[in-house]
Image (cartoon, rainbow, N blue to C red; front, top):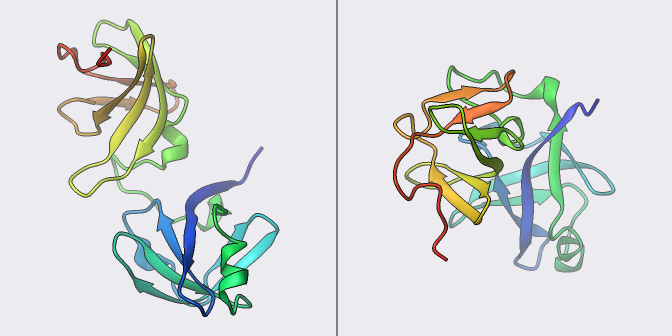
Length: 167
């Protein structure tokens, strides 16, 4: 059983001194501070410092001291042990908990499967594979009234056009 969870990825190098732009999949990125350890392709990465950037965190990892080293980290998925994760509030879910869940309409008819969670400023969206392609549904209670992790499904309200692609 996998005991780690993906909590972000390294988007690109930033500057010349080893900094990288990191996209954290968290509503609480303040938890990732100096000394915090993450796992990435090839081993452990320890955060030396973090500052805010435009939609990303600018992170300096211990031992990455130049642009060449930072470039080597581009695309690395950052993970941490599930046991180190913060406790979620009621109605909060990790993206990995939602990925793969069946999408049902209120009558119980299978309409698709959750591919991913896309984080956004106003609200997150569920990326859903439906028979005609991929759609995105705002992840709000009015449209997604039921999330049953143990049961393996989410219920999406039956709104005309919501689960249809623009073919």
